Image (cartoon, rainbow, N blue to C red; front, side, top):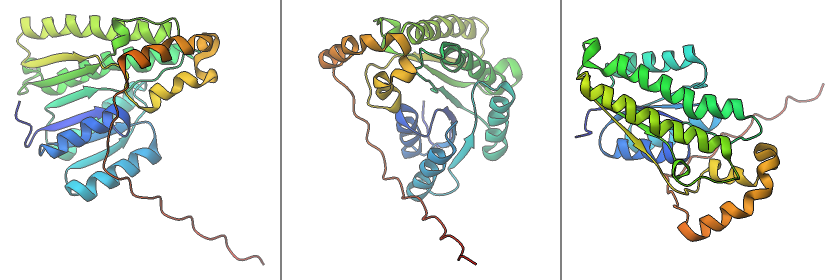
Length: 240
């Protein structure tokens, strides 16, 4: 797929794998919406991307992907800004075994929502021109760990859902290619969460097992454009 002139929406696009994808798309002359929950990091990311690629090619949308209405609005705003939608990257993810319900909502439920929203905006079934959806799973879908059982379940789910909906898209001639990406260990904030007991709960005690796997498989490093420093805070008003 030639990327020049295409419009992409990337969830979790302000950091980690999502940001790397955003930069790659812009380097190939696409236009993108960076959808991310973190307002501060999102604004820093887009400021950096604007400086490198111009201010007309990138839009930041603050969004909790578990909120159906906000996610719908992110898709709507993308189309309003750029006129169409060609690519959806459902990348947002967390690693929190203590709040496992949230992990399911972010890692699996929002991927399903994002896929269906992508089809609404790109499928020939809805009179559109087709496109591409990429759902981000993980090596955890094939190599489970006692350190993160719910995270593992969500990534299994992303693979199964994507395989099934991809076949449905082909049978129904939606004109949308749907793939799943399963990265191994990547140096991102999500990977760093394995050392945070407040997120891993009682499974924290298994962290050495997953670190041993990192030693075996290695960790992919991401490089980004330099992020501009935050603007200095305004000085406090003079005392009366």
